[in-house]
Image 1 (spheres, rainbow, N blue to C red):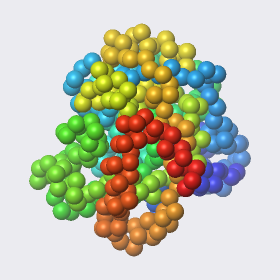
Image 2: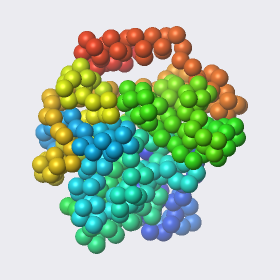
Image 3: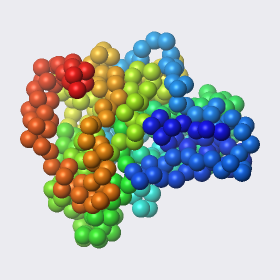
Image 4: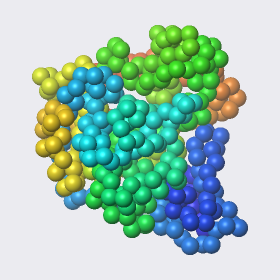
Amino acid sequence: MELQPKAYCFGCGACGAICTRGAISFSADEEGFLYPFIDPVRCVSCGLCQKVCPVGKEHPLAEHYPAAYAAKHRDGTVLCRSSSGGMFTALSDLWALSAGGAVYGAAFDQDFSVCHLRAQDAASRSAMQGSKYPQSRLDPALYRAVEQDLRDLKKVLFSGTPCQVAAMRSYLGCRKVPVENCLFVDLVCHGAASPAVWKAMLQSVSEKYGPLKEVSFRAKDEGVSVHLLKLVTASGDITERAKKEYAFYNIYSSLCMMRPSCYSCPYSSLKRQGDFTIGDYADLKRQHPDFFCEEGVSSLLVNTEKGEKQVAGLQQEAQLLSVPLAEVMQQNLEMPTKCPAQREKFWSCFEREKWAGLQRSYGRLSITRKMIFHIIVPLCRKLGIYNLAVKIYMKKS
């Protein structure tokens, strides 16, 4: 059997989960991304791995375009712990936890690597709150856990990137598992960042300041508009120093550390895989200043009839404001992230000098990128032409 070429493989793990012979294993390449490998001795050429693979099988779940909302959780504590408006928490409480079900989502493990976990209570679910930029690992055992929960007639909420949601849908379909009790939630995804780069940065932090105790992407210590990576180590909170020394967001914004398949992502459109899509609501302050709050607001797309049926109950957990779909549109709902010309140079630098090299070469924004992020982007948002400007830029570049 042959699997997808690396340029198209999502690394979703569905092929390994579906294989009944244990013929598929996964190994990280030099960029830290997992890819499947087939053991020719164990493989019986059943074709299940090709059948379950979501690549090339993307399609919208509904014929109509989604309904759009600005949304924020009613609990201020939940808002502060969330990256934007707390919709993952609201949906998981409403659909799964209140019914004694299970929630699946991305969380940090003991080494602060990112992997998908299962939760049956609010405390365990809370570990899944907030953005996780490195690609999350989806182990075969987790697919089987979702399957077993659904066969046991439990309510399940599964959240992840669109390709991960598509993979879970495909796996459950191949296994002939009814999905009426499963609510799928996908994210507006800009691309899965390299686990190898993330690990190298964490190692640098630990060597200088001691073992890590806490990591939080998009911490709101300085408000929702500041993308703050909060790092707490044995020597205390080093977030202030980290802003200068560990410029992960600057390196991430170079777009060089994405998984190769992200640059041709078929889900960067309104052909969503989730019953709901959640993301940032970047332009809310200009569009609806009365609904804006510094603690964060999500954009929420309702993509299916199952999702529509949850909206009334969701309003008990969150404040919802119906908005035109055009107001929540952003680049990765229309087109994938563009592969930068310097990507090969970026990885050559990482191979030679690891994190120190990336920090020196990509850790600071160039004058051009400073102008783009701090002058041009805010001006375009103020004028309401940001999405148009992005389209023009993408077509010309």
